[in-house]
Image (cartoon, rainbow over all chains, first blue to last red; front, top):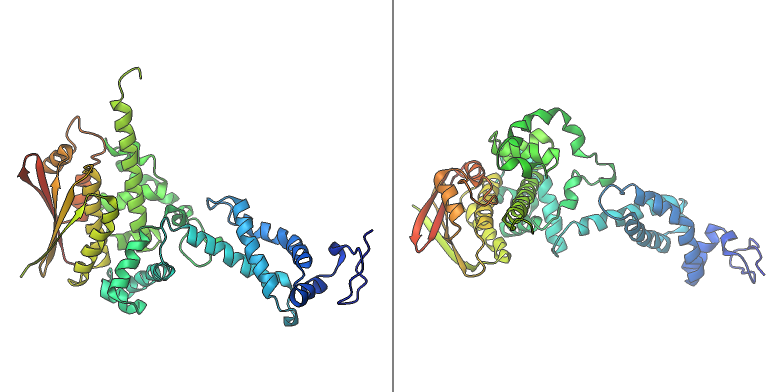
Length: 273
Length: 131
């Protein structure tokens, strides 16, 4: 037999339906009694919020179900840490915690090999510092200048830059800002450049391989290798960071090289095989 | 006055980052910009990507002067790559993977040249001016 909560805090009615117990009472049970059933009920109630937030990241190459799982960890943290005396709704408190967990997942997932967190953080800081110094100095900064700006040693800067190469292409599709869910796809800004890389596409060896690249990658390769622009200049032109330009150039060359190897293998196979 | 730093590493992609770090360590002592350092590292990466022997060692000698940084890589054995670098274009009939490396190098470094070492081996020298 199921009966409803009778409204008295701390009082349990035999056979009560948890779905009808008010949120405040459930939270009290979670915090005061460590009640796993109450915790479970709170998680169930707030799962739609997690799903909704996870779906915001659905275009970023990770399964939404995975993101929901990750977001659920954020929700559980929020439920466990929520202070009912603060006078705010749990949803208000939980939203940034869930988003934070999902963003952390993207950040961690973005590193193809295990890189110490301190180096990841320095690499991310360098991204911004290089942009700032480039504007201030009106040129690409040196390693010592970057180290000073980051309050790090020169060796740490070099290691962080090197570790950045382990960063996989997943992160490349975001602008590198802290608000990933709001970051616009940079490709949106590039429509007017469409004609500029036509020359590149006509090149005998590169054309088929270039087709493997997206518009922005082709544009960047064109600017770097046919227009002779520096990474710093390209970063300004395209509106992304210099480190981002560097990563895209490397990734694009790698994609093209893989295509060439595939073509080699294809054409070296005996006829009829 | 020019200084030279040399090292020898196994021909394994895992050691590429070590080459990068050495280049970076030298570059920071010569006021190389991040742009220039990254170009030089990318040039080295592309040379080595085209020349992938199954085993052996690779030597990298980095020469630094007040106005330039030079990198010498040896021994290399990919004959298509050698011809490409020497002729300035991919030779007819060469494997496609020798993707217009000359185009890349012309943008990434100020000079490059090939020197024969005998027995089919050769070295590639890259030179990047400071600033």
